[in-house]
Every structure is written in structure tokens, then in C-alpha cells.
Image (cartoon, rainbow, N blue to C red; front, side, top):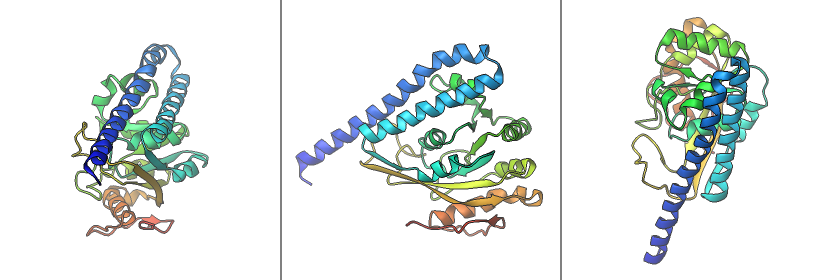
Length: 267
């Protein structure tokens, strides 16, 4: 690539990054004042239903704008297939980027996330998350009880078992929390794998560094796990095994939970 073309490409990637982050900020801030007013006023069942639909709609719009304006390419057919399934659902995924929750929520109706307490007071996300009755992870027992109650109400629970963005690819240590919730609620866990052409917005990626474009992101369904009560505490080891195998790199440990679907590597 000649120097002028390289300079132009870097400038275009920087502009796309600024536009993409700016669009997300605008969408979140547009909904924030409505959520701040409606959240305390509406009855909880109505408020959380409207709140979740608003967040899904906003994130869906954001994903479409990224494809239209920012040279992003998303393959999210696996999420559309999950969205067509009736009833409660637990969806767990690896966590390579800050975009992960946006992608999952944008395509899963009535989704509820387990969030860090700090995010509940975030300028961009806090009011909307509170109205949608997202679950805070600061106290384990209340968190588990809230998650089970949401599942009994038909929600789709999204959990990143690593607890934070992946620090050591392909997947970091995972907590057993989702397994405990699944066993107590008697709801299977659907495991999805998020693959990206660039580690953009990953754990060690500076917020001001643009990605190489086009950015390709694919979400695949890696399998379904039924968790018995006796197996719940070792779920962290099991799901890490499942995720690593689906990403093409198996860890040293071997999982024990039953997988209903064959786990494929990169295709």
C-alpha cells in the first residue's frame, strides 16, 4: 500500500471509530432523560418491559448504523434463532469486547443483564439499566434470587461468566454463577461464541485506537448445557472448556456437563 493510501485508510478508520462511539453516546443519552422520568413513575412490570424494549431498539439501531456508516460486518443469525425460541433462557458468552452486550441485547427480546454496580450509576447507561431492572452483581445471593425470579417471568438472562473482558485469549477463568442459577431455576444454558476480526475495545485496547476496517464480528451457537445441582459448582470449568473448544483452543481441563449440540471450530 502506498503512503498516501495508508494515510487515507488510517484517517478513515479513525473517523469511523469516532462516529461509532459518538452514535452510541447519542443513542444512550437520548433515552436517558425518558428513563429517568418514567422509571420511578411506571409500575415495575410495565417499566421494565418498556425499558428493555427501548434498550433493544436503541442497540438494534446502533448495530445497523455501524454496518451502514462504519464498515462493520455482523453475522448475528445465531442470535435471531435464539430469539425465536419461546420461554426463559440463559445465554452465556465469551467477552472479547465492549460491544458484546450491545450485540446480544440488540437481538434478544426481554433480555436482562447482570451488571457491575458501578454501571448502574453511569451517565450513559445507568438510568436505562435501572428502568429495565437489570441485575447488580454486588451481592451474590440477592443477584441469584433476582435472576431466578426473572427467568420464572420468562426473561432471557445474559451472563458473561468471565466477569470482565477477556484478559488472556481465547477465554479467561469463568465463574460458576450461571450454573448455580440454571440448576436452581431448571433452565438450560445456551452458550454462544463471539468472534472478532480485531481485538477492538478488548481488555487491553485503548479507547482512542481505531480498529482495522472492515470489522467483522460473528456470533455462533456453541451448544446447550443442562446443569444438574451436583454439577453447578464446577460450571466455571465446564463452560470455559466449551468456549475454548468452540474458539478452537481447548484448555488443559476437561468439562463434565452434557452438551446437546456438537461444538464446531472456525468454519
